[in-house]
Image (cartoon, rainbow, N blue to C red; front, side, top):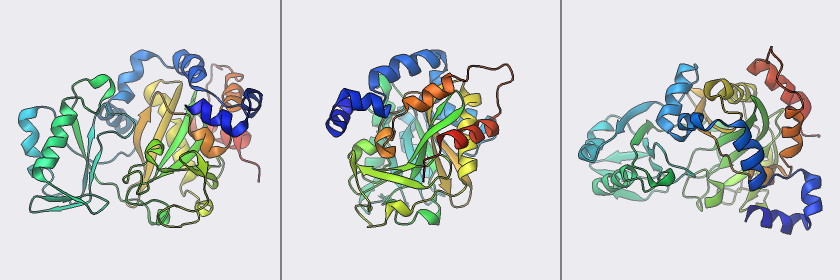
Length: 325
């Protein structure tokens, strides 16, 4: 489906190759299969393990409120979040944004979602039970429910996202950040930053964090569909910190090819949200550019004995992968 959309847009396989567009098979075989040791997958496929290794590496992560592991403990959720105005429930092994329940406020057993819709205690418990049963998880395996503090996104993103927290996805190859986008939620995506559900993808210049292109459902747009905010005015602050944080995920996980998902919290600053061993390819559409030239550039560098530090890798990427003005 991904390649068929691109073929339609660029009209021929030749033009796809000329643009350096990477398809699913090539991603799986030449990059994920070659550079990602499968023994490392549990570190990123399980959000709880990701949180632990990120904290051990000195990265900031959303505050953990608690973990529900057993069906008998599902009813404890209400007391668990009693002192937390807002919270998020995630299946530890969920993928593609599935099974994430965001609550922005609650009172007297009524829980309010970002859209303003409300659910009751039984709804919350049912959601957790489904998560434990593996309804949202990779391979349908039994899972645990991770309960985290609600992120307060930076005021600089007002209007760029609707009913949800925008996040920054950076593709990291052999420790080098090679391509970036911001994913902004919409009413169509139900407040989730998932492009397949209708979130907006804003391609970002790897050197500056400024917007270079924006898409929704793979089609170019200029204004946010719900707020009419001019997406081309987006520039992500603390950009170098975010790049270094993304780059350091290579040391955290040992994965050669990955997606790093980060957020900017109003109080805590840059945070690691998730790491992904199988990042999608829509980032190419958001940027209007292919990944292959940048990946091959990094491959050509080899593996020197004195491997560059994260800050050095970021400086190299900024120099070589900046978007021309």
